Image 1 (cartoon, rainbow over the protein chains, first blue to last red):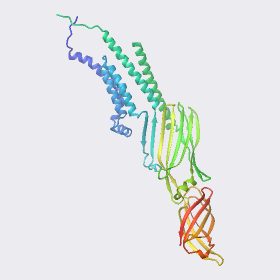
Image 2 (image 1 turned 135 degrees about the horizontal axis):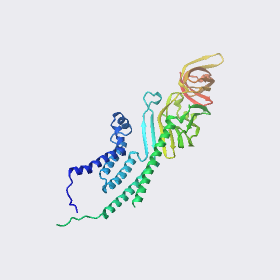
Image 3 (image 1 turned 45 degrees about the horizontal axis):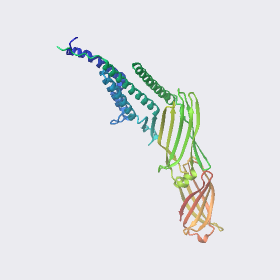
Image 4 (image 1 turned 90 degrees about the horizontal axis):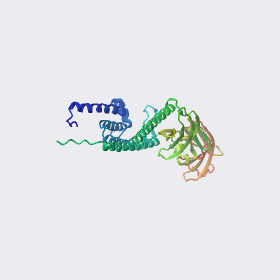
Length: 169
Length: 265
């Protein structure tokens, strides 16, 4: 039986580096690219009109989602991956409901001042997508269930693995 | 168990993809209908006054060039006065416009002018601004609801007897009758002609009736109007050179309207 030994820095790097790279890639695919336009000042100013600073908005939602994705990829091969996936689904559900005001979003706009007929006029735009949000929440609940089953299976498989006891001298 | 979990995972992924694809296509299709093809349009309004009721009507044209049905399309117009009291409300509903179909319906808002003027007599003499709120709501692809509210639009009310005033009162005796001639003027700011029988009743300063005179007037819209009415004083011994007159008009639009009481002398 091979003796257990301390891993060298080189070996740790070989394990960690692919995970970090994979986490970066998946973080980018799973929403990171949506955060890039927010770094452009003109775009972020436009978005602030809809989502005032200090209030939870789509950018915060995407940031949370990306953070979870990165953590999940870093902890791949452990049971924490499934725990984090469940946590992400729960946090996403709550955040989406908060950000979208339960699927009913209202925006108030003021028409340009040069429109004489529009003096004092306001435009109120409301979008109601409760049905779509309902389907999204059901699918998120199913996702939680799937992750729970995966975690159970992972733990069961780990429990079945043989334990190698060190030989006594 | 592994196969079941995998199947469940694929179901969820596939359902999510279908959901987001539907959402994207529905929004894209709706943008195409509303923004690109301008499929929802309001025609130019027409104002009609019949039997003391003003009806503002405009056609709603819905040309659904998108991929999904439009349903429960409704337009509501609310007219409010300066104190935010609702004067009139009109709602038009188009239940369903299938893809590739065209629907046209007339949206009407009626204002009972007789009732309005009986409650707000100042509207006869003073221009005013009404606030109009318009709401447009629709359901697209039976899943997404949109509504647009145009709040606080201004609707200008032009007074039919704007600046009404008695410009001169002259008294003379023509050897048979004592006659009081009243000159008056006003501006008709309303969009309709003011026609009808104007009647002036004369009273002395003790409120005793002295006589009356009538005249058919026709004041075109957006114009100044001045005229005079001669009143034969039936009881000259009661004439005190001062008092008040009461003016009324019998108008095919407003019916019988008390214009008001004006002092003289």
